[in-house]
Image (cartoon, rainbow, N blue to C red; front, side):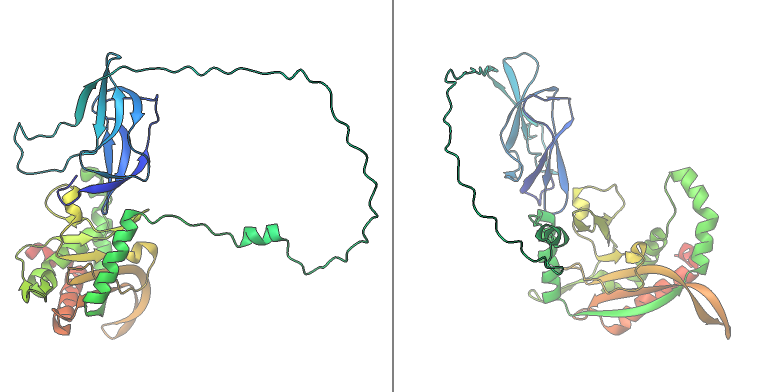
Length: 362
């Protein structure tokens, strides 16, 4: 686990007592405030005992299962993954498994069938028939309670750790930031032509689809260097503003358990990449959103929003033309960023996207 995480909720146990598990096979998953962490078996064996249950809060290094490995008199205990630390030595490395001696015992359950020898039965006295009740009138407007319950069903689910964290942080942002949103529109013609021209080459060389996010990430990163307030943060308690000479962008990603914002850096994605970030990019356009005003990912000071592309009639050189247009917005903390900086930032992004070749000059 990352150093910032000390505990999590045991979300799922994939094996039960008696199941065989292979080396490095996932035995359970732990839900943290940011991401799910897999717990893998260090050795091949059989699950002898579960030391924790789904829904339990477990800490780093806590045993959650005992495995029988090798001879029958040896067992391995699987632990919650240790924190990742940059100060590691040979003596301080935490062992992923703990060896302990013991004997596996089996208990045979025996069932005894008992037959009753009493064959006599009591005969109940016949009851006198009751007079038939008169037929009740049928109400044509009456609602069948079974049908009504099926139409108005509801159920409750326990909030996940991630959803609780999201709820807390969004409310914190709303209560702390002086949020304001500025809007601009972009003619996507040039970028769409660029994508069509190079998407097959990118797919062959890198094995990924060429989308618009990469171009917008590049454009906003360049714009943030020219408008440093977008890339900064404010701390009113300490009365300081932190300006950065590097750009780490949090890109909002929708997951089944909630929205997360991994940070685009010059490395592959790890647990640490779910923290930090100077400003965020949100792309509800993939869900066909025309316009939006996202919430700032506090303590960041701004979030850039890109939306869906729609054909609209605009004036080009004094003549009406149909062009693919996109609304873009930036929601910013007005305590740090003024309207001039926000508008300048969007105009720079607009110029880069409408003429992508300019980004090669930076």
